[in-house]
Length: 264
Image (cartoon, rainbow, N blue to C red; front, side, top):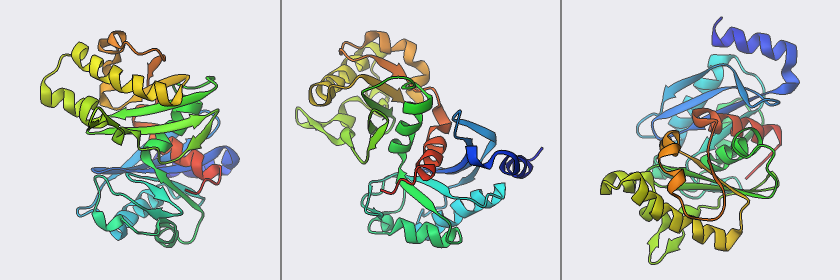
């Protein structure tokens, strides 16, 4: 069965439980149909390459291509690698700087035929998904997601409610941004062992603890797949668990956002 056939059949039989999310990254635009009761994708995700340069119009065309692949006619949630407030893109990471100042709702609403859309930061979407369906499922209180990669992306949720655009990877700690101290890229660039890097990350987490008193840290990014090599070396107080949704978290969170009518 093709992705389009899967979408058509599922939409006909259980549309009220389904949503659609698109996760825009620096290298790929990925999307799929999401079962909003389980957080699982219905069928396979579909991906197109992020156009270069990744301008607003070219990326919007890629998002439309992903949506059209599934024959999806309903609302669409979309993640972007940047801060979005009042519907306007304020920063742009791994996409063209022409995004800054763009009205994302006008852009995607036009590209997708005027349907309802929600647009949010990619780390925020992943945090929403992990909070409900992943490492934070059934955990109350303040949950913080960190995506460890080239930088440190963050999402903060309080009893399931998102506090958008936290960008705590840029928090300055002892004169240096957190992501310049403890991202996985720093580990690779410095050639640190997992144990040494865990010490650097612990220092960052301890600052977050002192400011936010979280119940749980959820850590994503590629290095989370090897969490058994470094989580045991962490010395901060708050429990730390690896993300479980991995490459689907952004898609799932985007679908959750539009289902909830979230507008950042």
